[in-house]
Length: 98
Image (cartoon, rainbow, N blue to C red; front, side):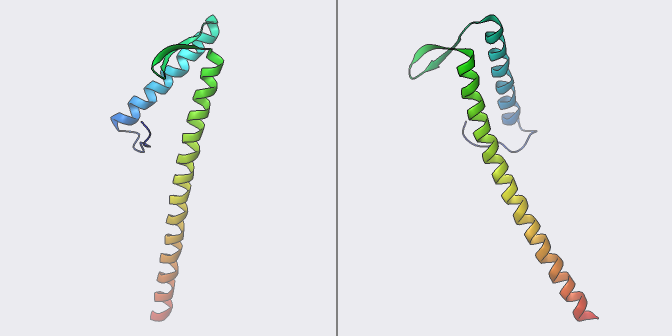
């Protein structure tokens, strides 16, 4: 699931959030018990130390968070610029009417 889900009320967003929460719980439990996490990777079952799995997930989610922050910041910046442009236009119309 590489696409970004923006709507927090959507079923897709809720499912992704539940998977992320479950993944962190699995890591916490594996670290507590000192057991590896068993995953399917490259067509085979492998055991991954909890610390390595934690690092993988942190890297994955931080990359997504940075991408989504950049996208939302750019959209916010564009909105502010368009709002400023509209304000200037309204100001110019008011001056002409005076």
